[in-house]
Image 1 (cartoon, rainbow, N blue to C red):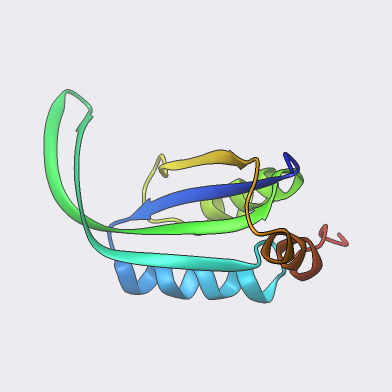
Image 2 (image 1 turned 120 degrees about the vertical axis):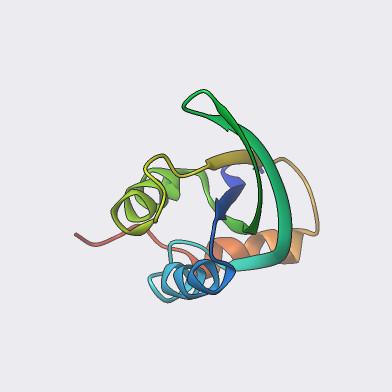
Length: 109
């Protein structure tokens, strides 16, 4: 079922990320979000290596909704370049995959 995917987003504030996840679920941009904290992120930014604790969420959604999720994150995310990536869901519990489809919908505006 390649029309579905998992979108991963990280953020410096796990509470902000949980609230953002709730907004996305309310807006039906994703069916669910599984928040993990703390996540230790090690990355290079502007020539320096950073080692920080962050929050991470795995969203279950339609691939067609990824651009809308990216737009919302870029509007609200505290990072200049938010870490957002997606992975195709190609198989799983058919009932759960159908639930993801049932709980998400394309934005009306």
